[in-house]
Length: 273
Image (cartoon, rainbow, N blue to C red; front, top):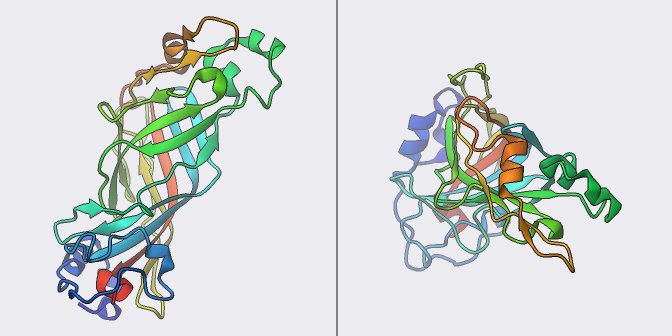
């Protein structure tokens, strides 16, 4: 299927599923992206996964992830890249996936724990907390209407220890993101996303710009592995303190995600001719 022949009016989820009916790449295909397609390096080449038919590159440019009473603004862009098969099964190589990008947690450790006396031991910079949003399972393709994204949030600061997480691989925070209007349980109210502006680039890449994924119907699990770690003192678990402070676990209707995105899609044989 030639991407150039897909009309703007019919670029929907069904059109992208049809896009996946491409012919498999040949055995002589290259193993590195062709010139001009370097952003798709996270997409498995035919030697890594011969069933990949569409390569994607998504950037979450801004937005906010709120769990319980804590809102984490997306200030630094997050990249999600890889490829998917005709059955919409996602795969990515070592250059793909969703590498962690630190996002600051407003209020830092004192906000998360309420332990204001820590300010007597540390300066404000030392009490800052980063939140790395990491994959906690296999996501779906970034289609123009939906994206399923299982995540966990790694809270990073030496005072919190090295394994402080909200969510886990065993109990992920599952974002069922859409570009339409949500139907959340109370007290949340519906919010609406945007599919994005659709265009084709001269190199046959299908481009969605300025889209917005939303979800405010997900639950958030407890914090775990958070340990007060001060040299010379016995480590103390902070899990219950952080959970109480943030309101975790937080049931559906108490959390929200708004992720602004740009997505590029292209046939795998174009990336690996």
